[in-house]
Length: 495
Image (cartoon, rainbow, N blue to C red):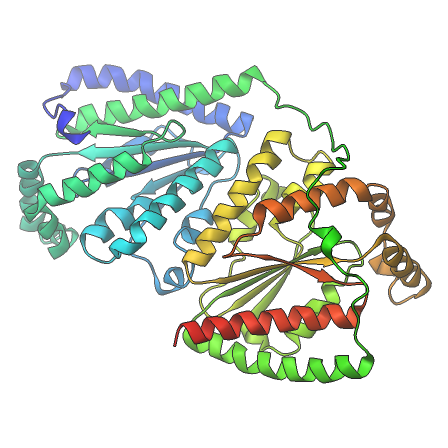
């Protein structure tokens, strides 16, 4: 791509003035329309050092209402960021609907600058590109406009700009020895950039090369690219084209059923339970400290039928752990802020740093269960969610995390008995709602959705464990035993 760029392009002052008067008005209007239509926008500035990324960010925001955008300057990862998955710090910066996020360098730093500098191991590159493509696909599928700009100058122009900066003591700090090294090996860095374009220039998030030898030309072209992208998004939104409605599930007698394999007669006596609980909690307490020492993050997700025993299982886990090293995240219906972002955003924000444990009482799988069946998302949205979820969990695993998902399985009669017991106990009546009873009426539909979920999202790296839960003692011990065994296996592998 880079060899085809004509770096002789330029604009004189008068032509530039005339164009910018029109372009700035257009961009200001489009920002207001995107806000009205709740279209989130992400604009990334990448390119060669000294190509003018900072200057061009400044020129672009001149036309924007400062209340509607935020600029993120991306540098080397902080210690906190290094303790999370690669894309965590960018997921947490994605804009709400109707807002603009501008990145002065972005998630591409890891596969460009850091790769050249040897900070990104080559063995990680393929996974990093997979994470980037999944990130951009998930956001654009959800309606985000992503504009990727790459500012191009040649080796001699870069060297000239470096010299000018270094002559002034107030700007000399901006040129690092790493910058000079990349200029010295300009062709090698160019090959890294070409590889990046080849792997990430997609129809949903294409690259736009900006000839940046002439500042005025670069500014006008950046405005034009951004305006074209936002205009297309606004026109699409104005059409009001509706997605296919969810027709609901129809029972299929030939469906693959993972739940039918669960033997709900499994049980433990109180004595067996007490003995196993004590032994397993003692082991987990010791393992929790080892996880922290070795900086291994753990993500545990709990789903299941209402009254299926999620809370009881989670309580027996946390009783054995240092409260400074875990967080339990109860997941309810998204609030207004959460609804203004892509649905995985709120879960990314809660992912643990290295050495810590995040426990989710209900999870991101609500997308393919309650949101699917109650019509809170479209058919296209829940159908693509299976891959989106698998991609997210793969990112967690790639970062070194242990990921386990538990489905707490009980039968319909056992659920009814537990509902009744809650209603008759004044201290537990708060646990039962009218919605719980309504959900029972859709038991067959939920069962079919759960079977599909288990089939499509249980992977060797992030498996589903179906927990036979009619007997609470058995269920709690199975959860504890599974967590202990998986952690022990991981620790042995890392010795």
